[in-house]
Length: 164
Image 1: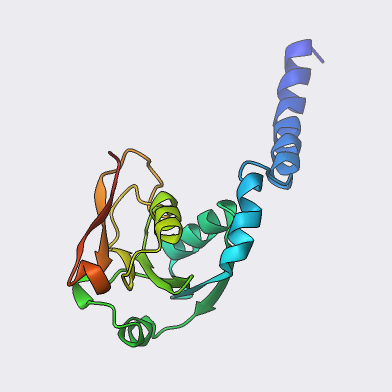
Image 2 (image 1 turned 180 degrees about the vertical axis):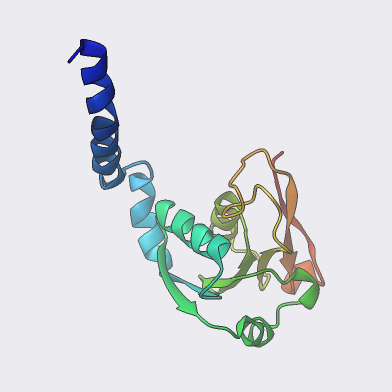
């Protein structure tokens, strides 16, 4: 067998083995945040069991260091109603952490700001499902607004602008 044929025969197997090995390696990218995240308690996320973008957002939340507990339900509407979430702010999943409602594909920088500043509001939301938001492509340059609601935010005001 020629050297090129040998390399071409071994390369796919080596690539697969390397990928499998690195996929299971624990990541330490956000290790410095884990202690601070643990003090916030568990983030409870209610989502549809069939929604892939919601599962993607949950996976990203875990990568950010949040302790996440999920509840899958076909009735996400009742969760939004129970949280007194304005209907114009609804998205696909609803999370609760630190006494706040987090609706939809909210970027984690906005959540961190919320939990650090602790404003007198009910929560923050990214209405709909903007492309590039976490779980919807996760493009840091995607532009959309995160809206604060209730409390000092009244019926809604821009809390954070993603992509700027």
